[in-house]
Image 1 (tube, one colour):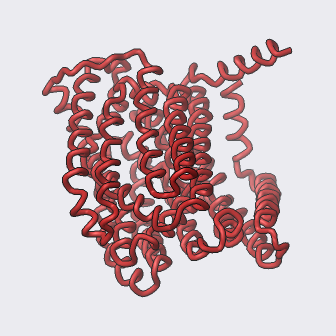
Image 2 (cartoon, rainbow, N blue to C red; image 1 turned 120 degrees about the vertical axis):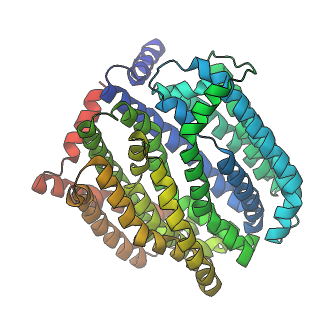
Image 3 (cartoon, rainbow, N blue to C red; image 1 turned 30 degrees about the vertical axis):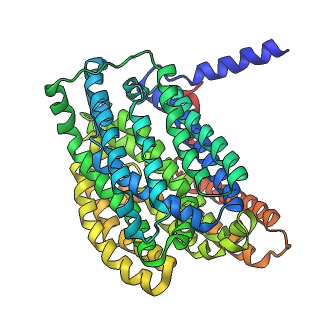
Length: 504
């Protein structure tokens, strides 16, 4: 009996290993990336729920200061080497890997050095001297990660996401185990710090177990120039995106302090989780897939529309659901002291809905050799966001900060993004927007029903209420989506069947 079950399991796993034509490989890769991102996010969010019961908002705020600093240095020094190797038309890029490894190792040393020397200055800017030793210790983590095997680029280049799954989840499980264990023992911010370091260390170890390439410290200047030339726009885009995505954290801690940053960051992570997972899935899979279609605009456009349809079908109801159940969710999983983050979650969920809609835009721009769009759009958004955030945060606290972020994206950034992607894939505005009409309508109906139920339901048991509201939302959305599919031939059922056929 056991042998039969194991044989069936091996058969299922083998059927999911990417192979065959591009569509089949892309769909199978999507299953692995979805499993990876969902598993990774469940571990992250699950650990946050546990840790929120053991640690204070100020602890999360101190860790947040360290993460803002380290993520900033990572973005400012990211040369886009992996993307350059993925974009390269040659299937074999072994000749590039040693040079890429040396460049990444130098980057890790630079980040660690800046974190150690600059820690007092960063702590002084935020008004939190307790952050100094945290900044210095956590600076080791990027150095450990940059020692990883450069052969991991093949995981994405070849759509071998079953290996990427093991690589990513190894780090996430280590983070969860170390952080929760130390939080129980120490009950302070160092549990978060060492959990973060354990994650990067495990991923470096896993990289050598999962790929047989072995790097050697060799450097070719011509290769370095070629890689950096493509990556320069990605470097610029990451710098701008960091300032956009985490500049709000810097403004919050500067104006309101570490405890407010703790509320803001936890709310942001949960509200943006669905959008971020979809964005990571789409960019991880569709950039390599779109790159193979870069010379066929018609095929690229068709793949792009299917991507938008599927992502919004999944993300829109989740986003509206977060808005409706946020008060019950926070009460059930975090407790009363975390209730100030409820309005932030609801506002940021709107941002998540919009980001999920545009999640495929960047991959299309990069595949069509227009990574500069990422930088140029960001350079418009950044000053507008800063100008809006400072007065809004001073006036309305963390809810004002969230409202400023969302408001600037709604206008003028979203119309600009739509204009550029319509131009890139050579389509019309109505053709693009028609892909989101049905999921938007179904999600609005679902959100309204759950919103009313949330205000009517009072069992005195927040967790039970949350489960009931979630089940109600799923049921309403399925019924409304099915009705729209039958009435208007939405096309979602056809796309799902194609995905199922691709993995048979």
